[in-house]
Length: 338
Image 1 (cartoon, helix red, strand yellow):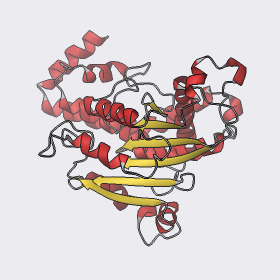
Image 2 (cartoon, rainbow, N blue to C red):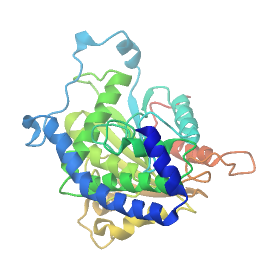
Image 3 (cartoon, rainbow, N blue to C red):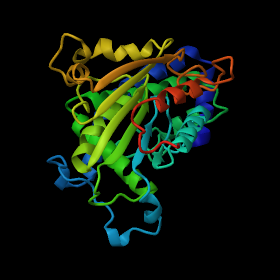
Image 4 (cartoon, rainbow, N blue to C red):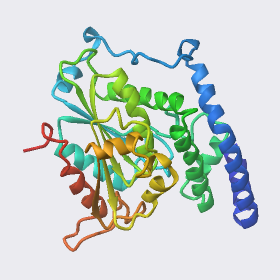
């Protein structure tokens, strides 16, 4: 199947208009099927979930926690990383993302870093998983594919999931799925106690569309866990409704060259300043939301928030500048290396 798809796309590479037509058709199909796929996934979870899950997912009882629990007892926070719409799967990070998260973990050893949640699938499945269009996505992700238009299709496909996370009709289903995946991966990294004495510190750290999904999941993480939730946006694009009431703080870090992050404030009425009653504006007015300019970063690429290009005379990369800004946030008091 992969060979057939490969030969077809190699032919399309020389037929620009055919590729553009394919992109348009795929865009329409993806948009039409996105909500359906999410609802089908929800039905497969079981009839008991149709009333929308009120209880948190099952956590490990104390007697079943392995020896790693002793080590995890020293952890007082979880850092959950949700990437932007160009992401392909839950188990692959760009070099800049890897550098950033590794260094963040070194600075805050009492935190557990979770970077294997795919924010554009309620079931946490990569695009190359068990899907109808999986051969197309796998070919597009192949380093020799040579079709930039397919990379655009991946972003378009993920943008539809971003839209579902913000759409009040489908958001409760989709965002619960993401929250469930987050808890499962947190539990796999370091077992979660069923009844923690102190609230668990959860830092949802996202780029681009991953911030919207983070905010969408925050509501259910707060319901299911005894948690103190902070959302850190690196040039995020997000709605002004979901997650603001559930989060202790939301920090939106933005670069001087990033015009894309402005889109959320333009297209979502809940972000308009005169919509005072919206959760976003209430958080802003009460000091629970803060925007911070952090440097010359663009939205993505080598000069993006997690880019590897050198950004300053002292040799610091764009990802390094972002790391410095994140480390300055007042959210690390009990986890920073002293």
